[in-house]
Image (cartoon, rainbow, N blue to C red):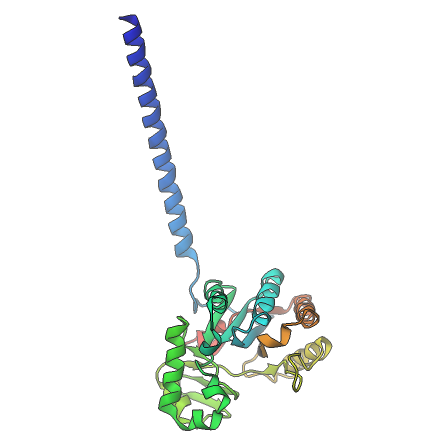
Length: 278
């Protein structure tokens, strides 16, 4: 009798302990799930407004023709390690194979530090710009295909091969009178040009200007107010220029010099004033 009672008591105790432990774990899981939900809700989405500081200089690093590994991956690595924000204007027909798809997925999933934007599917019918801009319906469909295929979540576009700006009917630049620009603008797309380009050396995948030349140009642009928007500077470059280690090192040095000036703030292009202030 005593042995039976002891065994029953032991089983009852074990069951009670297990039940209490389970209740405790369930509660912790609920808290954990709630915390996870709050974290998801707290993560900003593209276009979430920011407040500007008039004492700062806002720099928008915008890199075109992504994905172009290893240049793209080099740039992403440097931007992440240096803690600066950037925007990649992607081209759909460059996303060939699983490796390049993973790069685009990484860019898309890295917001708020990295933003994925639209640079057309075919890069202006494979650089046939005259045909591209003379057939606005086909060009428009090319941008829409890129948006769908790359799952681009913002209505922000850079035109291939020219420097044009368009925001809510305010259009200026090389293609200000072009029908495709007017159609994109009428459908709520923001077209981004640039204030300064880190150019490519002729016939070489290498940056043309030195780091020192680029820094000098940036300071001059800000000091003379020679930017599209006051205290805002959009820099254009291309992923492919930074394939080789020596040029990747130049990019890192460029970022570090800019970071050493406390006035400089890096942002993604969805926080450019004429995009943010709809």
